[in-house]
Image (cartoon, rainbow, N blue to C red; front, side, top):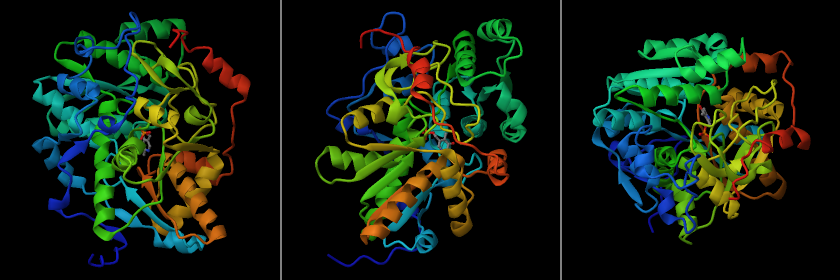
Length: 459
Ligand SMILES: *Cc1c(COP(=O)(O)O)cnc(C)c1O
């Protein structure tokens, strides 16, 4: 075999090396992820059940556990060209700082205006809405990354975009709100007075600053009751992991080009979309018995879905309007403690990743937020990128593995996902810099309250 040339600091694929299909990891899973259930009948959701909520083509993708490769539509490929390929970067300066024999690479998804990987799925979801002839879409957003990505995607395809933004974020994070409005989205603080569920919640809890669960309920209500609209979601769902496989396919192609074979692949996990995308082709090889990799999910100690959650059916949202999913969950009433600033606050986890974790095909660990921000700052100062707090969980995981290599002298190859930039998270950085950031690990009693909200359906 010809010796491959040494990889540069930043590996970019050329245009004709770009993946042209998404990879559907479910096709290679022996045990498929558990189906979404109708909350009333407890039967698996069928195409027709989902039609009032989601776009037809996206429902097909949601239900398709068999097709291994799904071609990326031409208009989505065109949009991807604006900010893809994303680089796989050899973190030489971080290696030097840590004085480790390990080789560390990161796949950087923050090089677009939305500042995160979420645009990879937003543009696909907007495209399918447009192709179906819809007028617009609705969604919810917490801190605002997903809302921003969907606003950009909708403006590109000339679709109306209604975003229900958790009221406390709407008020405290005006900059993301303005990016969304600049891209033409209609942004409403949730709970609002425009929807039945919003009016009810406002009446029951006067002065409430909202929650993600409530914003989801509003967005779904508007989608279902407005002709020509559907609802779109930025994580957790099978279809989102499918679109995010572009991250892993590019990573794999870049590795193959330079003969890089990772030992360990690390990603942060909120709802699981970036991690599911990054690991997809590698996990595929593992499932087919071709190769083995260690795969590590990193989550906040204050929202430990994988490491302390239960693998059961639970509601996907606090308002209980969405289907039930079998996943690692802390209970749909679980809310991380008020001092938690580092994102990744969803109570559940992707059903695909949940099944893989349940089968022991991947590991998970959690870190406290001050340690995560320590890692973020170490990284920012040597590699030049100010990471999103979410991404910093993966940085912390990679640093710890690299330091283990320093002890053992092993030259392991570590790849992690750097999902985005932290320019809109400066209030969290400010807390850290002012020494006002604290850690809180939920006690078993705290978690028991969340678990009590899990419906007992015997599954
Ligand atoms: C939303 C987000 C995440 C977490 O979502 P996943 O679905 O778990 O990937 C991680 N990093 C960034 C920058 C995000 O915006």
